[in-house]
Image (cartoon, rainbow, N blue to C red; front, side, top):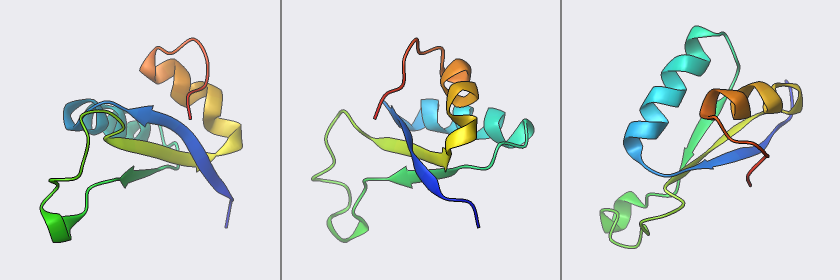
Length: 74
């Protein structure tokens, strides 16, 4: 199995769903990692750092390009 690493931090659920769809359509292996804690129904989830993407290193620049970021985040 390929090693996955944190690539970018996402702002909200809408962005996460859109990016997840695009990456899946392009066949880019990735995992969407949520910071939500279901035990507390998300009350400790901040406004920022809603979720991040983990993927193999070789897909970093392509994922960043999908998001329109100039430089890696995370």
